[in-house]
Length: 600
Image 1 (cartoon, one colour):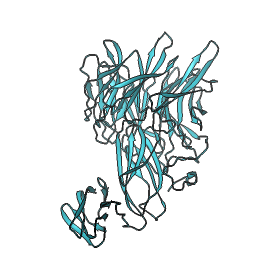
Image 2 (cartoon, rainbow, N blue to C red; image 1 turned 90 degrees about the vertical axis):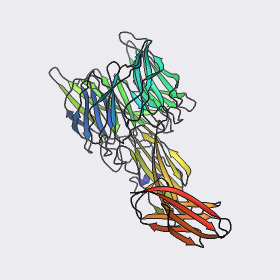
Image 3 (cartoon, rainbow, N blue to C red; image 1 turned 120 degrees about the vertical axis):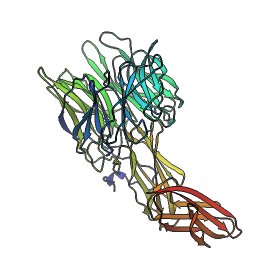
Image 4 (cartoon, rainbow, N blue to C red; image 1 turned 180 degrees about the horizontal axis):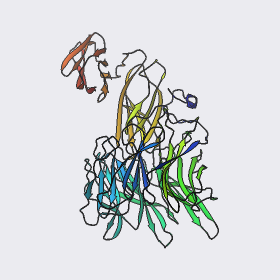
């Protein structure tokens, strides 16, 4: 059941759904949780589900090693396990399922030419790190920024990382072997001083792209930042573009701000004069022709200072993606700065949460549904330190989302780190719309969800933020049994599939195909079901129908005579089974349809 049914804005028989709200203010409850202190400078924090309970946990990447905080489901965290590096140090890293076992892994760049691979156990812990050295000359990891995506569409996660070469610095790709190891890194583009690496699908072609910041023209106080976007060809090679140059140091955020299926860029640029500082929000909306539509907006500069990194989610539940950043002012005031999207591209209103009278070393913000609830309101947090002359206190600073009246999808997110959850009926009356209400989690960055019914694509939706997505499709279908499939698609076209079936009108009313052949309504090919299994099919033949049959694992199970429909219930053992449906006319001509399904 939808929590906010009033938000459906008189849907009727529509293909897809977007909320119809005007802009709401978001409401937050400020929370601070003291955690063990470590010596660090701007650590990296990653939000990812490490124990497969559907709630994001935290990994703090300190100079001493990664530290895990397990989510309790109420917005607080239990300090978990800490790990040391075998050698070297780093404050960067990336997560993903690098060995294909359905558990989140962690990879950290270490020292001159090494990454440490922490394979996840799926219970919030990691196996001891395994170091991999890149043996090829000139491929030494440079800096702590690293990213991951399936660059060459082979179903295995690859690494994207800065490297040092004989010519200076470059961006390189290390192709994954699918078991947590990688081939030697290969340079794809030269650079000067790489500060940040990210991934996305900026042109919406289902091929992973790379974005990075290259600092140039550096002085003792500042550098210009050139934003590069490398558009992937799908074979490990790229086309380099430079859509933005900023006059000062910047970080970039990535995500689909306008929910069109293409990754966008956003950043805040500070311009300094002798008397003033102008803070300008720049949003770059990805286009299919591999350009960006650039919008700029001056934002409140009464307390403008240094902006850290960014994250994105729909905080007020109005169907438009918002931005959260962290900034410091005068060394004593730290702010959560929420930039809430309006109905106009590139235009945002600002809400701030201030932490005063503290000198805080800040990390990056992360977003997630850290509170387990039927509707996933995204909250934001970061890990930082309040430093005094005598001590350092490290804390998790959380802006817990308590907004009411918004819409974040009507289906609870899966209780696992990846997967699809469907909240829809199995039967609807004839003539009534069938609603496919679903949500998805991924260890990667989700781009869209697709709905297919009876082998035909119905539509796709782009309600995505970070590792979360939701969809809401409403359509009217012909009476009978139907086979559906939902796909959750990452930016690199990694697919998750969920098969289901539903009936319009009376149960068993399976519609025959429009031409000669068999329409199998149940079970679903490649799907999973439980015993007893409903076997349902209808046929169209030339001439007159004599009989229909269903065979399971080459043994005939059921027959009908003189009618073109078959509907029965079969008790089957657990495991995969082959189903063969036959339709035979009075002349002896035969039609066949074969499928495989798994019984749990």
